[in-house]
Length: 482
Image (cartoon, rainbow, N blue to C red; front, side, top):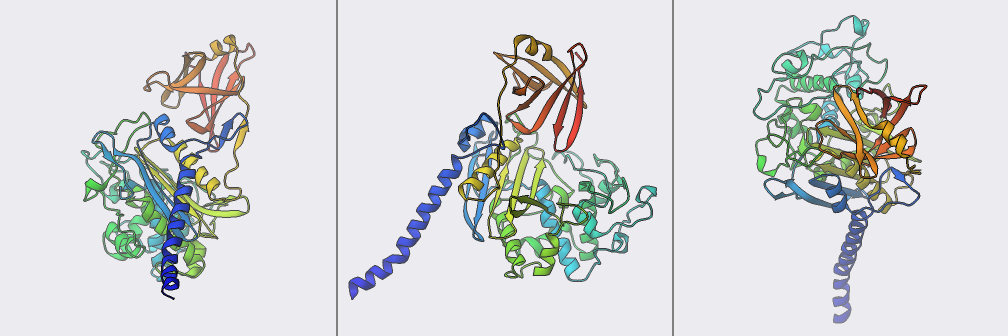
């Protein structure tokens, strides 16, 4: 009997050890299965995370993976600050950039749920310290909260560059009015609200003021009290500037150099000001997933969370999140991009899966590849569907015809030989730049930015006149200047 009791007591410990071993194996597989969406050739790539970080000049990466409504594991790689030699840990805070908008929506929808604001009424009914100045562009139609959260309010100001830590920092009123020291224009209507989707960080900044006017407290304090603390996000804050800089990652540019001042300040807190970790963002995702099933009452009811996940006036833009359909499954998603920081988050609407990746670099390829790796290892059906393309080798005359300089908006692109290949770079970027990968004599991409495709436009004599950059639904002409 004693032996039986001893064996029974050992069983939970053995099961726990087995689970830990299985988790370690999943981590190992994720770390060695990085793969891009666009693959040149016909074989799946299985990249190693540390190798890809080095190749892409990304100094620090932090990740949290969600499985069955729980955080399966979290891990950090590389440096929080490459100059100081400070290693990244799972407690290192990164700038969440536009993922800030997702948490912001929870704060505003709490006020909707508490019936302190009608989400489809004129926002000027609730703005107290500033009123939105409607003009002829809005065509006598009024903006509501749901439109602000879904980017269907017809407003301008896509995003914000932030401010150097030594610069004068504007308040929210100066940002909305476009008054100095603000470094962006005033937030105004481009077209009537409700007409179509137009991403607007400016619109999100209006929701920041709505919250402070209705809650009668500072925005960062309200979000801490009503959103971050209830979710158990103890390693997160909207304070700008941050009060404790010892736990913060420093931003790095595309060449891997630390940006001036380590990071930028964002008084546009709702749009870009959250400092957090993947672990804390995973807690947010899990609570949303449970709320959708009526298993959590921390912030929003099942009905309000379902409303939040429903596209409003657009096919994918919901209330503070985007709905991404992968095969027969849907995910709520938001990405982020601040100076020196990039991040992405995915949570399944059903099944309790998800991932958060944050970096203090400026290569989104590492995020894309790592997210794809998680999807492959954890068996997320149809999440990762790579596109395979065959590479083409150009003749010497064809390569010679492409060398030169091209105008990309306010920048200059330079194409030049690099060994036996062609490379493209911005004027300020050191040589050789990025290797050009040709899938046809008149079409190329670069491995570092797989979403960007360049089309070569020639005149009747076959002379290259223009490059067309196609990315994220936009086509940008780059005329030849030399």
